[in-house]
Length: 117
Image (cartoon, rainbow, N blue to C red; front, side, top):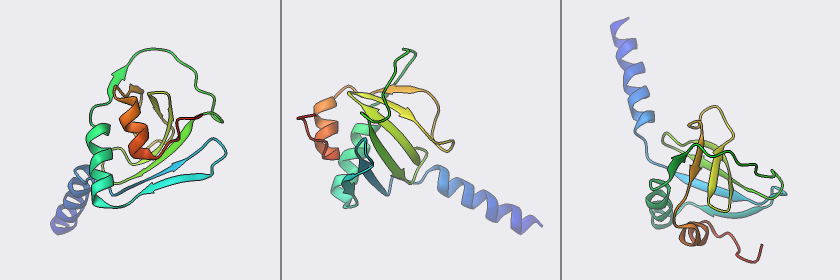
């Protein structure tokens, strides 16, 4: 019994501190825009992701106008809705709340989001 508890604890800790493995970006119509899988791209995303700031603002984002970010790995795993510097988690596994990205242009560049939209 003790060894099973230790295994669960190790697996929990490994998942809690895991790094982001990849990110898939979809547009409002769920067409894939980009997929970040290379270490360099994932690291660039992670650096910007860590700068997000929690916000208590009340905003509305039209689902069809926002981008969906599927993040795999780490505490941020799950689907997020992104639009114009604002991020909202859409899955239970993601943190709750609204977040703001300060460096919007760099964030969108890393994600491959076109700026003509």
